[in-house]
Image (cartoon, rainbow, N blue to C red; front, side, top):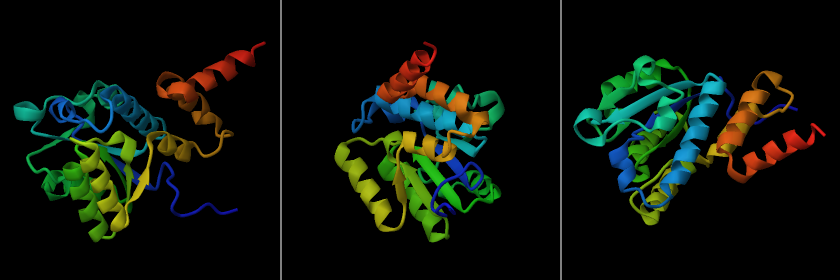
Amino acid sequence: MKPSSNLLSPNNHALVLIDFEGQMAFATSNIPLSELRTNVAIVAGASKIFNVDTIVTTVAEESFAGPVFPEIEEYYPIATSGYIDRTSMNTWEDENAYKAIVAKNKKKLVLAGLWTGVCIVGPALSAIEEGYEVYVITDACGDVSAEAHERAVQRMIQVGAQPITSIQYLLELQRDWAREETYVPVTNLMKKHGGSYGLGIHYAHNMLKH
């Protein structure tokens, strides 16, 4: 009856959202931007619902890459969330970002961001080398081509990273529909951003009224 230690729970990991900015999104082509934004909203919303330790980091926000996606700012407003801006493409090599991640004192890290082959590979490989367990939300990552994204994911898997998806992340945190305190927020998030699955939830909730 004991769940696997590989499963994520709200308290056993930190989430790092990396470079979800306009300039990085413009060249992303492995996933439609509308789909990427939906997946990012699910991830950000899930982390907020479950009070996951979350770090938002940007690269050259004012001089190059621009502001973060609205889907992140909805849950982590810039005025109160302390975004960490960097010059380094590898979050792990930025002193402020590195200190913020280490300070969370979590040995599991979940990463999502743009671009997969640079800004996700860098911290993923670096964290694994320092003994962290790394999970990558692959459908909330993007790159300049499908080839670039897929090779990056493959490279990370080869050194031990675990790929997951945005909905998988949300449902792994919920785990049990008897957890009433998060049931309504989770199903509302899915009704808003969960595509056909969200429509199914909306349908079921309305049919149960009859």
